[in-house]
Image (cartoon, rainbow, N blue to C red; front, side, top):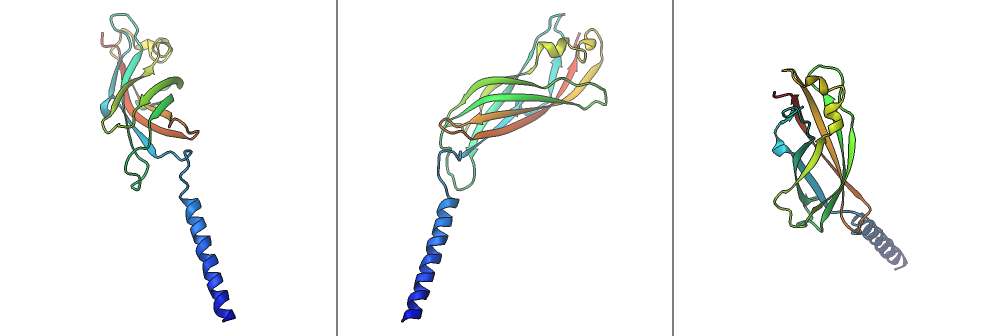
Length: 180
């Protein structure tokens, strides 16, 4: 009987250990975050940037569509709202030329409600006034030359009440020219 009791105690201890591991592995704290944020720029198409418009320089604000989805297949609906807090714009020259635009960051407050089965539209400042008047783009004014770059915008989001960040990004091809 003593041997049977020790086997039963060992089995119970193993069961408790597996249950504890399972409980720790399924931590349901608010820090986890249960949604991912998806984004597209300019509806997924290329972006045409006019360096000047009748001699006037305008910054480029590009449409960005955001939507939420559950983090994994076990979560059937997003838990809460998400706020896009900032984004970083980076550039890579893709036309074989030299020089590129400087990266820049923007602080924003874009609210994405829980019922985001449809995209939530917003805009991001892609090309600044300083970019268009700088040494890379300014020489295009009054010419038929073009410059092509790939832009990547990385967004940092947060679910209210948590400290964990949700990162997402989107890329697009940008054609710079002066359409005269």
